[in-house]
Amino acid sequence: MSSQPTMLFDSQTAPYALQTYYGYVRAWRERIARENDNGDLTQAALQIPNVAKLQGGLSPSQKLIASYSRGKLTLKAMATFPINDNKHLASTANLWLPVQAYYALHGAGLAAMLSLGHNEPKDHRAFRAALSELAARFLPPPLNIQCTGGPQSLDYRFTVLNATPQAIIDYNSLSNPIYSGNLDCAIGKCLSTTRHRFLEEMFDKARHCNISDKRKRRNIPQAEKQTISKKLHATTLIDFLYRMRVRSNYDDPDIYLYAHSQVDDAARHYADLLFLTQAAFSALSVILLKKLGKSTFEQIEGQFS
Image 1 (cartoon, rainbow, N blue to C red):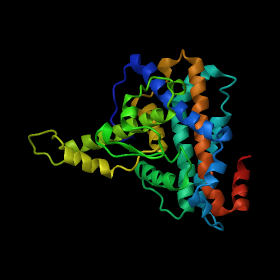
Image 2 (image 1 turned 90 degrees about the vertical axis):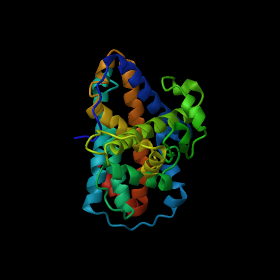
Image 3 (image 1 turned 90 degrees about the horizontal axis):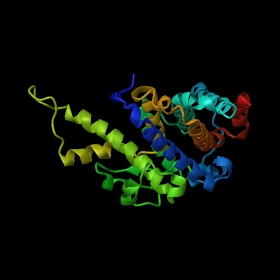
Image 4 (image 1 turned 135 degrees about the horizontal axis):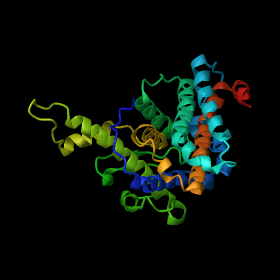
């Protein structure tokens, strides 16, 4: 079960919620596509200094192989679903696509962590925190963009992003990021709203701690909010994908179905999220390529051809 609180969903807001998610995913895709041919981040990842320094020769454990295989098979299922021939299936397929996208990268991310000698995270929050640190050191732009700080929106700080906190606040999340003129503002809004969501959950938990028997909750002073904000790991793409996964899987499981009439938009979103997942997967795979060596890595990859 999810630890996130279930929220009542108004079907009238579905088109707006979907347009927001569609726009965020499109912004990530466009930023990647403009900097890398065909969304393959292999060459970009190989140029990262920390990646270039990695030494090979690692013998892969069964856990590493199983994790990578799980992610690869999930990604392959996403890629082989016949959306191009059956666009009317996109709305239903998109209900599960955020789940698949997250778990595809969960498998690749966990395999990358294990190859680097890291301990296996105990839960999703620990995994997202660990992948946030890994992204900053080993992944190319824009996958290494991070949002830190809080609790207020103006307190957020961004790495590898050409946009000010105020410009990100002013960005209309319902606008088309391609024509808005600033993909970085769209990506910043994506990460800041994601961080805001997780911080609010932490604040709500704190409001119900250390209270007297006569009170149901307490007010949190600003200083405590700042302390809580510092405890939350830097927010990255994987946090956004997890946010989408939770909303489509638990909070608003029918969100995509309410917009079933927008077939072309749904099909385009499927393609965008698939592109984004494939790009991130290719970057994470480079870590395994470097640590395992080309021969061993290609042997593992050969199982899925």
